[in-house]
Picture (tube, rainbow, N blue to C red):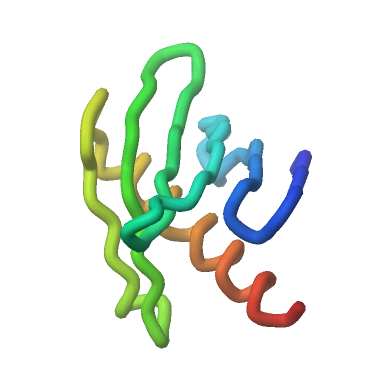
Length: 90
């Protein structure tokens, strides 16, 4: 996984899940709350907004535009939980 963190919200992740699908996501904060998750790869591009929760199942993600795919949404939820838990360690 390549990782660049300039601060906790302005981050970049490139990762693959078990089936070999590769995701590239850029994170940027929304001034009104949440983090925009810009997902793009060769086949699709989409924009989500993620809101943190106390536990992984409490987090919320909303599809805003682009290709809507349930598997992409699940992958983004996983990487955002990792991002959130790593940030909490700092």
